[in-house]
Length: 372
View 1 (cartoon, helix red, strand yellow):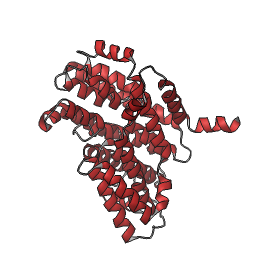
View 2 (cartoon, rainbow, N blue to C red):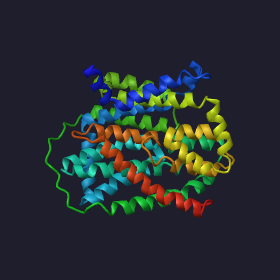
View 3 (tube, one colour):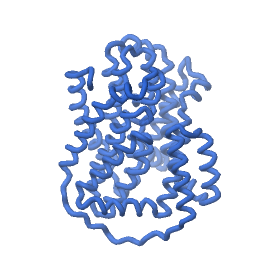
């Protein structure tokens, strides 16, 4: 019994998601085919492939090399923090918020651990997450909800960027202001052993990473990419399969199932139908806090009259709670791997940062709804 309770406490988020998925599966309109449709296999496959490729980089010392190169451009804690935050912000618009966080959050955590500045891990990771969610709103490929809205409402690229651009700029300014509260103490990097360079394996994993990015940008088919990545890693270093975060993948699976199931309930659809019209921004923002912005987008698109407000609402709605954007869970899980991590304290700080952003973005929208 004690072992069971211990396991439940250690995997609280996963077990709660599992319980919600199971209970919601007993709904009257839930079918196996519906559950299969709710699983976003494309995202799951991409996450898995990126996990094993990034694990390969980590083992080969590529991430160590990259983060040491960061010190060429930065001289103090504030500038290093800005670098990690704004790399997520700008990178996410091209390769999605999920990918940006998978790559740069572990890099930031390692950097601040090696500098003996563990106190900066929570604020920087929180702002990286906000930055990735905010930066990804600019382009159609930045996140799944953008891609869905772009296709569903037949936007052209310029029209799309005109809607998301003003909020994107405000978020960039806010991120910069928040970094002003980080101290400017000089950096003192501890000496470390250098991982021996392995040219063949390094080049192989770089090529696999490029393939992953091509799949993210829909240049190649995601399943073709996955087949190449899995076969290549099996040949080059099959131990990398152990490094994937299967708990995070399962968490996404259970949450996808739960959200898909509750969307089949007639009452949920009726509420959406009656309340979403003329209130797309606030309904989508609020619903995102509960079921996350991707499923909120899919659920509300059928009822929304104002696609621009829906687009802005679900993107701003990615800020707030930890589940408002699925990408935020990636940062949380990365932080939980830190020795001596305090998940509840992280969630409090993370939520405070997000609420402060909402306190600026929402009033601006109320004052200038056609722009922000």
